Image (cartoon, rainbow, N blue to C red; front, side, top):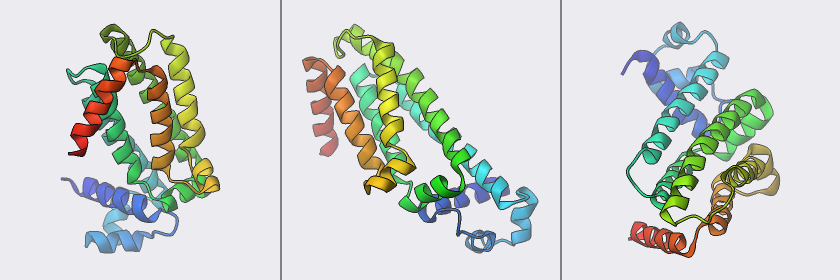
Length: 202
């Protein structure tokens, strides 16, 4: 792992847990056991570090999501494992990080929102088409369903909504996905999903 990658990994972990606004470059340097000068050699400002951490976060998570989507599994299994992957990602984002994004870096949240909208639209559209062919998903208009789904995710799984309503990001995401799946899956699809959940709980 390069020096820059070490800084990105530690900074991402710290920002997700503690937020970025009150986290100083001195604190990051101390955790890395390196000089602040070394960090500034790789990132000229804290703002540049935050921007590259965000890009690093999106790139690594896109890789994990694509891995779930590109498997040979059926549509329900892909939905199950992809939503679990997304849930794991979301569960690592603290309330403090969400608050910081809302108050101090709305442009970065906009970048995250655009990324997830693109990823969800592309991947779930293909999964729904696969699910219809397999008999797991009702014969519905894929574009309409995906548009409604993505709009719902954007509406509730965002800093302003969760902080205003005192709920967690993971709760907002899981509830929306549950409602979505209950509406699009056939009885065959629902049984398959229940089986997956039961096996996963063991």
